[in-house]
Image (tube, chains in turn red, orange):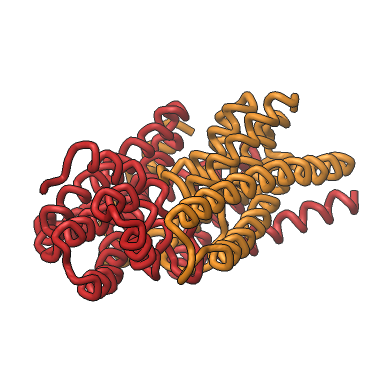
Length: 251
Length: 220
């Protein structure tokens, strides 16, 4: 027993497609079964046993996509050890919440927004577009790819004791650091956008003043409203477009 | 826009659509990346990046958790960034492109919901061999690819129509269009502070803002 290099590569590679059949019935259930299929074929020579194993693993399951390989490695270990299917099912059920929560906090709420703000900051500061886009993609995918590659091996080594694998990396600290950097970059981008909004008024002081005040009000509103600011932003842009369309018609 | 560029942009739209959820998730589907790449394909990455930054500010606070409903920005960003760059940029059509993208991404989001319902109805559950599961998994991927292609192609055609109609009317001062869009983006980007802890990060936010003002006064 042991995770061969070929199996490891196969699991990581297939994990990129695990969400391909996302649906409201089984979430990533079918994708998870397809992810494990080559390994299940190796373990279950009997076609009926294979079919039963695939059926068991295609039921409702969900995980943050970058932590799916971690779950797959652990489940593969349990399958290899001949663990009672009912226990494997309970194990998978127990994984859903923690893997989703850790992934959401680390990736969607901290790392990704900080990385995209880095890209935006670089472009807004006048650096080339390819450097800005490339920086975002490199920073984001450094964590992304590490999580997938690390996850397969760590999950397989831990098996049922997956909690120890999750505790071996201080995801909370990583998330906090990313959030700290993200807050600085957020302020940087906000300031640049507000300065550019004011400068869009060009040589007309009244227009520049109005735009500057508007930007300041928008920033205050964004800080106060948080995620609800999206609707306000939608409204402002749409009303501005309607106003400019009416002005054009009236002209 | 020549047919070759249109096809390349349609292919880009398919790729970013797949990248959103089904395949990869390398984040080329982020509006900032998708619009910039579309602008590059269309001949002007700077204009694409402008549209990308503006659209990205709308998406910073959106969290793709569980079965939440949210707009899908990738293909809309390709359409907006590619169209804006292809028409030579200029703030005269900026608001038209932005508003279209904001509407189109909700259309894309609704198409995701319908596709997920279709996936659920198509997949085997109690019956079905391993080969069935594999076949239907790839079929779902193919459906998503075609969905991306259709969204991007239709988006370009519709937006071209809107821009043409808009250009029949007298132009409005581009400065205030750009100013309004940037001001809105500033507000929406500020709202992303809530992701990082809100008030607890006020000092860091202020430090970044101070640096941003300095850089802005030097660069702008």
